[in-house]
Length: 335
Image (cartoon, rainbow, N blue to C red):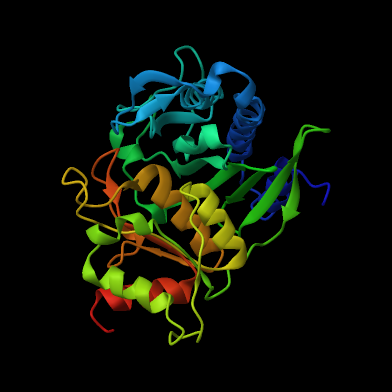
């Protein structure tokens, strides 16, 4: 493992831009601090009551667990006092979130899922934090809803932290994708995965096959094709599905493969998919494209979608470029 920290790595990249003010570095340092605090609580979640259900539901109608609340509050407090954001949005909160009164207001906008995969907390499976960063479009003062509703093509950075057997932060600021592993002995994230590139095609598919009966016919045909020895790689793909988006994505990013959460007809209230555009799909699409992969709804590039609401849902097909393109071809009726 290299001794280069996340902050040092960002500073090295900033040397290419003499006009850089260091404010983005300060924002990332705030996110890193929040990740350190969250990982501390995740590590002891099984020993205390923090993983129990609160009895409340989030804006998505899902049970809120105590660790969800803690992670969200940690992100909000640290970013809200850091002086680098003008407005925020969280997957756990219905309305926009503003900086704490009396603290400086910055030029960045952050959307985040504070604890993705939280239903896996009590079985000790990997969970994570996902975030995306835009520059504000409004002039001065607190940010506006339009600052939050920006396309993924306008992201200036994105990343995720996965809390697994080790804690790893993966991020991109538009110059490739890099991974940093947390070393608790020194209290720093150290460079461990430099310039991550996802293979152009993989041999792993990740999808909840329990929903097969709810899928559109092209998705059923595609998955059956992957399981056939007569597919393009002449052997069946391997099924790997954790049920934690950040964990499934991280594995496929490193090894190659495809994750699918397609549109289905299981829940009439969610006709456009389950995953959230701003908090999950956009940031991960940015990362995968920076690593040479692709992300799509099946008919549209994720980063091209213009958000119209904070908690907008989309189908998500993400991973190795050739695999994503093949799904799009199935949906277009070419197979």
